[in-house]
Length: 187
Image: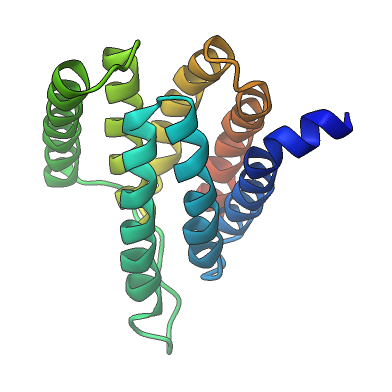
């Protein structure tokens, strides 16, 4: 156990910080963004070491989107940012954005890296970028995107030997369902 902790401490700390981030997201606390930034910094290292390049680059985007989300949520401190559902235009932007991000990730991963799973890694990357943008905008449907992305991640992380992160994403999937119902109930 001590050997596991000493050789995987970055993943362990990242997983703990990520859980805190998710709990604060469900609770709609603005401090979620701080934990999003810090956990992403830890996972940059984890994903670099395991050659999950899309997920690694995604952590940099999470950091940027966390700053954006933090500013967006803090924009008007006199009132709480309300959760909304997506309209037709939002869905079109989301679908086209996901396809665009997927294509960019896939082109980069398949041509310029030694990624062993460029299609799957690109899909996770695309869904995650869009899901984080949706959280920043407080769209209820962000949770549905996260359920899909998290379920895909479970298989990928176990396949790559990131067992702790695989288990973390099982918890994420369940908590995304909880988040959906909590945010819907709060609407």
